Each structure stands twice: as structure tokens, then as C-alpha cells.
Amino acid sequence: MPAAIPPAERLLNLVIALVNTPGRMTKEQVRSSVAGYGDARSDDAFERMFERDKDTLRELGVPVLTVTHAGHGDDIGYRIDTAHWSLPPIELTAAELGVLALAAQVWQDQSLRADSTRALTKLRAVGAAPEAHDLVAGLAPRVRAGGDAFAPLVDAVQNRQAVRFTYHAATTGEVRERHVEPWKLLARRGGWVLLARDRDRDASRSFRLRRIRGAVRPLGEPGGFAAPTAEELTEASRAWVGTGPERIALLAVTPGRAGALRARATATPPDVPLPAGSDRVLAGRDALAVPFRIDWELAEEVVGYGDAVVVLDPPQVRQAVVGMLRVASRLDQPRTDQRRGRIGEARGA
Image 1 (cartoon, rainbow, N blue to C red):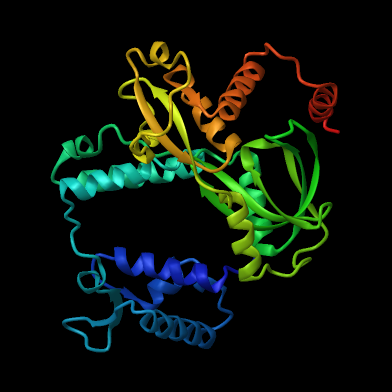
Image 2: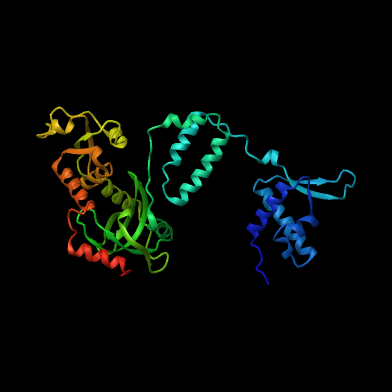
């Protein structure tokens, strides 16, 4: 015997039927053609079910109308008044459509990107200006996909369930398993960051999702740890952003490139001397002074622009960029413990 259709699904089926009926639907038609009402065991059970569903829809603001036949007053049917329920026509200006197009570009995750693309296509169909994207040409915000780690971490945050995963630290290059209580996910400068309590260190830590290797696995049951306090979240967020003094990095940038760095750039302080040899590097490039707090975070951002950005100062950021580029090009071999960690991941260890 097939399972009974849930009440919520039955309500949705009724709405679809009453919206699409050309005139009206009688009770008999509802019972015979709308999925879920055939589950009623008797006429009285159907009457109670149908009356309860009508009342529920009306409480939700759905205008279910009672319609009588012109020649037979006792012949009653029902329909939904779409004229009073449907949204008014959408009229978007070129600027509004451009902003929506820009927002849709943020989502690079495959599932979210598909949904946002379909929605934007429908909005463009009713927009008055197909050239709206020209208003935001050159602007391309990005939130990189969180990969396979994103969905299980969202569930873990919502369920307050501890997890374990293998993590490749940016500062030390260490690859090891972490056991954490996930608190919050943040979008930070083009990527996702997890704020969590590291059980092994008994302290709050932040983890870039793109540095998680392999699968995220649950530890224990949902509700396994207390929700973080506002003070704990504030402290963890402050630690991620950086609490040290703001410093200035001097960068040589190819014209027309690195828009995000240009947007944050400030006037070059007159008392900051350019390092020796900067004139040669700056030939054909723009000098930018970009504020930052965390060396490795700025280095990772700079690396993403390839040869379009060269760090002139400070030396530690430049060294971090060079180190990342060398590892990426395999000029340097990873340390033995890193290589073993990767081999273990490949074998599913």
C-alpha cells in the first residue's frame, strides 16, 4: 500500500490545481484528480480534510474563492483568485538589472550558480534594458566554491555537531587532522572561512575551506557542544581579521588588473621609501599602497593575480608570495611529513 501524501504536499497540490483550473473545481473533481485527497477513507473524512485545507490556505493569505454555477446555485466549485494573489509585473531599470547580474556572479558553487543563472535569465526577460550589464563591466566579485566541505560544514554548524577533517595550514605547511566544534561560516575576500573551537588546542581557530583536504566527517551526535557566546564569536572573528596594527604594502600592478587591490589602495605615504630596484619593476606598472594586517592573507591574494602584481614591500610578504609560487610550480619539494600526509589522503587514510 503506497504511503499517504504529507499534508504540506497535499496543500501544494491543491494550490496548483486551483490556480490552473480554467473555471472552477468541484469537490468531486478535487477528490478524484488532486493527489492526496484519494487517501480519505470516507466521504466525511474527505469533507473534513478539504474544509481544513481551505481554511489553512485562507489563513496563509491564499484567496480561495467559492464559485457557483450560473444556472445551478447548489453546484459549488472553487478556484484561486490569481488577480489578487499574483505579484505585479516586474519592471527593472538598467541599473537594477546590472546590480542583480553582479550579485549573481558572486556564487561560483555549481548548484548555486545554476539557480542564480536561471533566475537572472528570467529577470532579464522582463527587463527593459538588455545592455544593463555594461553598467557594471569590469566588476567581478567572486566567492569561490567551498568544495565538498561546504555542505557538511553548513549542516554541522546548524546541528552543533563536532567534525574532523585534514587541514593544510598556510603558515607552517603542516598537514594534520583537526577535531573542531564548528561555530560559523564567513565569506572572506573571495573564499569561505570556518570559525570553530579546536578541541586539540582548546582555543578558537579559523580554517579556510579550500585548505581542507578530503572529506569532513562528523564526530558524535548533533547538539554535542554548546553554541558559542557572542563574545566568543567576536573574539574569533577579530583574531581572523587581525588585531595587529594596520600596515602598508607597496605593490607594482599592471594597468587595468587587480581591481580588488586597487579599490583598497590608499595614497602612498611620503615617508615610505621605495626599495632598491623598484624603478625597474615599476616600468609600465602602477604603484599601489594597500593596507593589510596579516602577511600570509595578503600573500595569498597577490598570488591569485599571477604576474600582474609584484610585491615591493614589506619583505616578509614578498617572501611569502615567492614561497607560494615556488611550491605551486614544484620548484620546491614539500617536506616529508607534508608528502606523507598527501599520500595518506590519496589512499583514504
